[in-house]
Length: 90
Image (cartoon, rainbow, N blue to C red; front, side):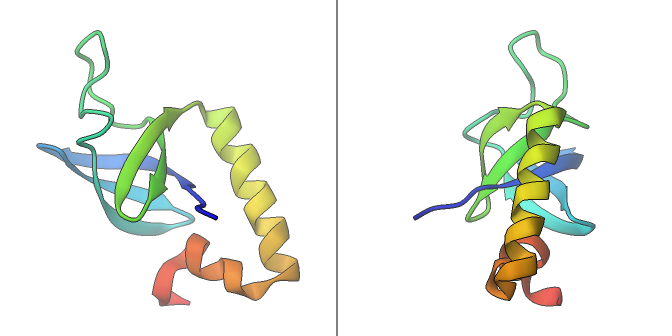
């Protein structure tokens, strides 16, 4: 099973981004979604679904927050989910 984790793009340089996932800044490759949207606007501030260092898709904020809440609920029952949310920092 593959799980993508929602994060918000906080900085972009080329196709590389810093994405905030639960307060942890992760380096994420934007090649699959692009650093700009279809209208040419920067993706800065947008939410993406991150899997193994790549932004797999752009998602809306409501979907991102619902998914984060579900993952947090899973973490409350199964602490191993914490690695997805918080990385190695916790």
